[in-house]
Amino acid sequence: MTKIRKFDELLKVRPEDYDKLKSYFALREYQSGTCENVITACYMWSEYYRTRYYINDYGLVWIYRIKNEIFTSVPLCKEQDLNVCFEEMVGFFNNVLGQKIKLYLVDEDAVKTLALPEDKFKVYEERDNFDYVYNAKELMTLPGKKYHKKKNHLNAFLREYEGRYEIRIPKCENKENILEFLYRWHDKRNIVDEYNRDDYELKGIEYILKNCNMIKYYMMCVYIDGILEAFTLGTYIEETQTAYIHVEKANPDIRGLYNFVNQQFLINCFPDARYVNREDDMGLEGLRKAKMSYKPEFLVKKYTIEQI
Image (tube, rainbow, N blue to C red):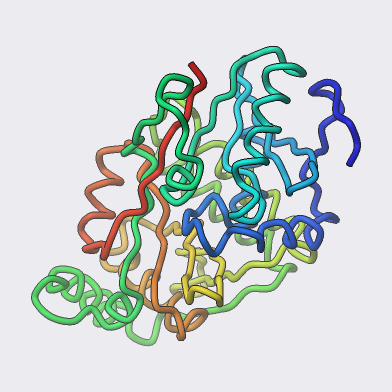
């Protein structure tokens, strides 16, 4: 282990280190169930969080910086090493960075394992960061009354565009066409977000598309009359039979297209999935309404931990 003495000595997240990083994710990504513990999301959001890391004797420790705030999250280590790894992290923040430790996006299992003393740490839920998890087979088939509206939108799309749509599983060489669509979608939606997360998401997608020979994930495109009108990107964790949907963009003027993409991505790329994690709603009212409308099976809670 290299002794880190200051922020500038921390390591950057690089595409060529994918296999090395993946080995650390395997230490706890299957236990946490959160979208942050999936390596694709780490790469997508590395610029937004200015992600850095270091390796200690127990695993990998994340260091993030947004504006002037430096913080961390649950380290990538074995569950039995979490407490001792956390103690080392506290020492790093207190003695090297000269500040109290703060962790965002902490999963419930980590909170229970750490069992931090209330007189030294404040722990509280962050509803805006909860992940939405769905029954995969239901999203593939949309059965019963609870999906009646979704099925109507899907059938409307199938009737209107029968013989005109095409599903394609793109390769790396298709990235320019995908990026052109994404920037067109971004300009049309004009989402207002004080944290500019939508802008950084677009940059993150562009980054992983340009490095798709090193970073592993699944993609699907829908073309209508030969024009790209929808794109989605995700990851599959076989150990938990969970598909993580990181990106889903579609022309909002085409009725039922989102419903079609939602369903077909699972059918074409994750047919064996038991669960679908569609990430959080970022506290955006419209996004929360849309995610709730698909009837999540459960929400994955996340917490913030602050040293007092």
